[in-house]
Each structure stands twice: as structure tokens, then as C-alpha cells.
Amino acid sequence: MGIPTQAMAAPPPLEAYGKLPALERVAMSPSGERIAMIGDVEGVRRLVVLDQQKKPLIVVPVEDAKVRGLYWAGEDRVLAYKSETKEIFGFNVDRAEFGTMVVIPLDGSPMWQVFGKYPAIRGGVQAFGGIQQRSGKYYGYFVGNSYTLDSKDTRQVCRSSVLYEVDLQTQKASEIAPCFLGGSRSWLVGTDGTVAATLDFTSLDGRWIVRNAKGDHL
View 1 (cartoon, rainbow, N blue to C red):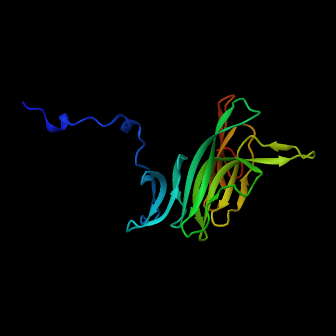
View 2: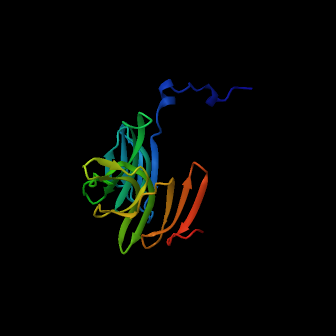
View 3: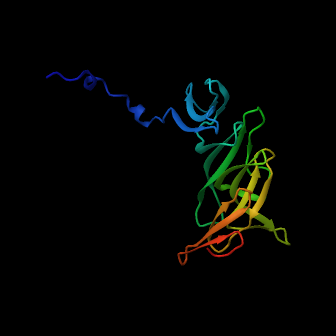
């Protein structure tokens, strides 16, 4: 019995095994008529947005950025969540991973970073809670650390999470839930943009508590 032709083909070169995929993240717009993706275009890693006719609406080089997710806010804005390892001081580790959410308008307006206009919100975007449309506008929900100044102008940090609603048109960030210092907290945001429920977890004793908007235990 002869050997199949496919089995006799030469193996791929060694560098092919370490090559990244030509196409990575892909996200479809709410209408399904536009697609955002991270891909290799002419040997350069780029963010590309295509319309229904496969016409590029925007092409942005991303180089070696660690893009963790692509999201749509309507049909005219793409959000790219990326992370970066940075050195830190005064903590029990030397390096940590920090997240950044970049908003990319498709109308030619400049790209911008969530919390970029708020120096008091430090440490990047710790978590992303989704996007909501309300009254014809789009809002994103993000978790960050909020810094305050004491009477001696010494910068102090709330080392727990604060939930912000960010207007994806104006870049305005509004705090909708304060710090929780007793452990870790997750939020459920209602259709009106306010917190409908919280889930608190304390690692020291393994206790978790669910509360409604009024603070009552569920």
C-alpha cells in the first residue's frame, strides 16, 4: 500500500510553531454589520474594524499590546481592554498587571482612556462591568482605586474597589458605589444606572453576603 501524498509533505519550519495567530480577538457590533478584530496586516499587528462590505473603517497598530477583549458601545465606538505589567513600590510584590480600557470612536475623534482625565483614580481599570444604553447614550461600568488627600496633602489610597459609571461620549466618570474595606465586593447595576445588588466576600472567614439596593440581606 502506498503512502498518502499528504504524509510525505515537508514539515513546517521551526519558527512557524512559535508564530502568533494571524487573527486574534473578534467582536461583532450590535447590528451585526460591523466587525472589530485584532489581526496581522502586512506583517504588523493591528486593530481593524470592517463594515458589511468588508471596507476598513479604522486601522490602528497595536504592536505587542496585550489586548484582553474587544467590546462595542453602539455602532460607532469600539472599546479595547489591554493589560500591562508594571513595577510597583511599597507593596508585597515588585510587579503587577494593570488594565487599561481604550475607547476608539469610529467618526475620526481621538481615542481616549477610561479614567484618563481623572488623576485621582489610579491603578488603571481593575474590572469591567459591561456597557448600558440609556436615553440614547452609552455608559460603561468600571472599577478603580480612588485616591484622596488628607489635611497634610499626603496622598492616601482607598485600597479597595470603587465602581464608576463612565459616559462613553463625554468621558465623564461618576462614582456610583463607594469603597468597600471589609473584603471584596461585586455589584449588579440596574437599568437605571444605579446599584441594584451587591455581593460581598471576606476571605478571612469565607463569608459572603448578598444585599439589595436598600442594603437588606437577601
